[in-house]
Length: 473
Image 1 (tube, helix red, strand yellow):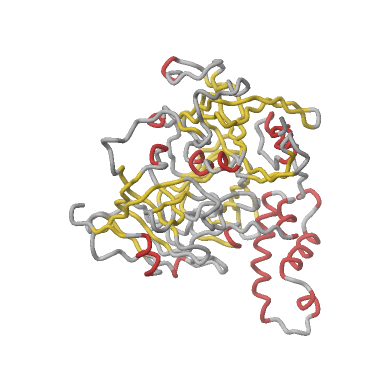
Image 2 (spheres, one colour):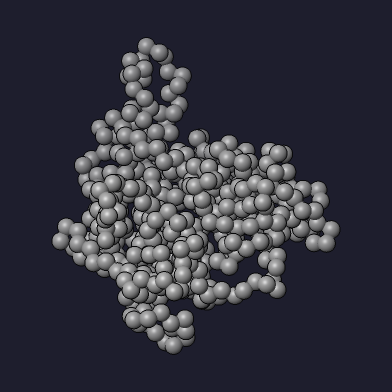
């Protein structure tokens, strides 16, 4: 560490190549090696035979900077990435062994991967790190969700509610047009929903876990507004941990005859993560299945169709077909990922049986080990097409089959030009027409009642109606 060179982000970006580095030439991150495949699949972003290890620096090097929440000033297609800045330049990043205390703090990155990206300056994967100023580091137990507005003396009487428990799931960020309750002007408000198995205590108690309280009540907290929504990547990493929210107001929402009590963040809302050292989720190899849903730990072996189709371990595929599903750049070929609240669908095709992991509104994905390979970063596409809307209306096996069909049509570029159907139809439209003619009506699924799904602990769906009612005062 004493002989390590401090690299700047500008130096990494200027070189423009994928590289890995550490504070010691002898340091080697304990990154497992994914299973090799006997043959590469056509259409993959990175096939098994095209992968190569990230080139290491020839000298010890560290990076010093500040970890921050997402910001609209950072032009990133994924929009909700952590930021890392050294004062001169800011890039997207992801971090292992995350602590909330690191947000806003200066850290020294001891081991890292850097990957250049076409859409922005680059992406930093923080493998090993430490705080720079440990003497002045305060062991905080509360984090205002809107720091600039938070004031203990200015507490609204309506924002007196607290929620304490185990964080079960988190929805993606969705932007909903709605009225602010004061004027008739429509505004676009981002936000996301958090599901907590809570204790029924009326007040937040940081010692509740040690007092034998029961966390058996299903509670939902909606983080509303652009500043609160920026907490999404941080709270995603807390799924499975014990957390608490205070300074909330509550709303009783009625949609299609169903009622749901939702707690909503305010300018006084605070996140309390006092039990991070007692994380309840234990990583297990393979499947942790509870009925048709559960969690899965496995390596990414290939990315297809702009990341909508992810090849996992042998005969296991992950479907990420919902457009609103935010994904980290670090979901790369060779990375080890942990998928929570995913649907398990065993499907038999003519070539064999496939286990499909269907991601829904409750699914969260965290990277447990970054890929040691020089593979491409995943850039989420927010563009809705007629084919993507069609795919979302299908059951998981039909979605999987349709994406494979789309990959097959990718090979039709060399067909003769006198083929009228190929000249008049885009490949997406051709895929849709063909799929509609082959998929039986039973494979189509209507959009599920979102509130009813929540009350029945089923998968969440689009939240437009309930969000408009929650935000309205």
